[in-house]
Length: 172
Image 1 (spheres, rainbow, N blue to C red):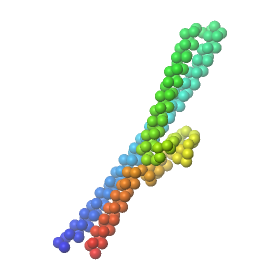
Image 2 (image 1 turned 45 degrees about the vertical axis):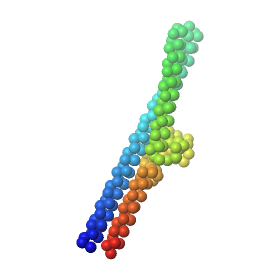
Image 3 (image 1 turned 90 degrees about the horizontal axis):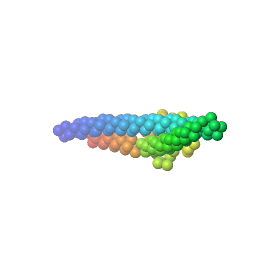
Image 4 (image 1 turned 30 degrees about the horizontal axis):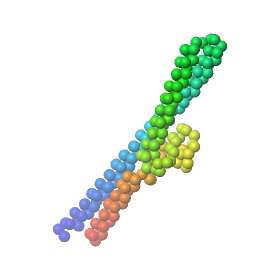
């Protein structure tokens, strides 16, 4: 056959190597995106908590300023400043809530899990469904098992292995 079978076999082996490399690259890319999205969600969650605390402190400050004003120990301006600070803190908290929800949606999207799944990083108490409280390692495992591009890379790998089997059988 003038070396045709050997060339087909080498070609099939090269395709397998390429498929393995593609599979590895896709897996690494997707896992890196999940890790980044996870830490973005954790950061947004921490920022939200700090904004909630800031709002609480601003509320206490306003109450104190009102009591002091009622007793004549503080000016009306102090109470107005405290009210303004509380309004700003509430606005910042609402913005932080939006950023957290956005980061959470990005994490769900990157992982390729159902969009209505509420993802809560492990630092927050579980309130959602069965996927709610997971560590980063668990999220990576779920992503590796269910993400569409990783599944596609696995299918390409399997197809390349089948082509090798076919090339070997032709050689026989």
